[in-house]
Image (cartoon, rainbow, N blue to C red; front, side, top):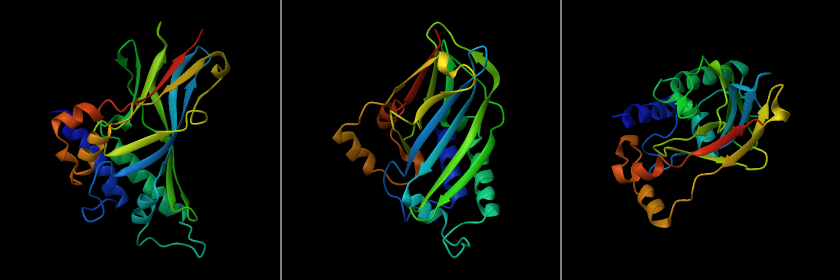
Length: 227
């Protein structure tokens, strides 16, 4: 089934970061990310890339940096951060995980080229790591009659994303001002579902079918239209 490789992609990210051993995580979701996204458009109003910044929660920062050599001010060296970026992008690059990003027009999904400009930053004061990267499309994708849809989500709810509706989603490139974007957040989970998710152990393969049917709909959607 598709779900298992997808979960392995998420687990690989955790392993690469040295995070979320069974002793430190006992409920879904296991990781929280404050996210930003920029959708790049070329001169012909085609989508060329999705630029993202993921800012991980403090627990992630504490565990992922455990044992790493730091400067007197708590900083991490450029080499250390470059190695983290390389490992994380490799873990996220499994074809089935698709970087937890989907670009589609008229129901057809775009293929991605190799990501570029991957960078990890460390805010020692806040105790938070962030990953920035550009995800280019293999070929520029023209918008359809209903525009384009960009979905960012983890269908297993191993990772929970959050977007600031005012500032976290924007357009870039020469046609940015000529086009419109709209952000649609996922519906909120009810209390009973949240309790069920909280009771699930850290093993990402343990998500029951009935809960997977709910959490796979927790999609952050960006809609792009050009008049």
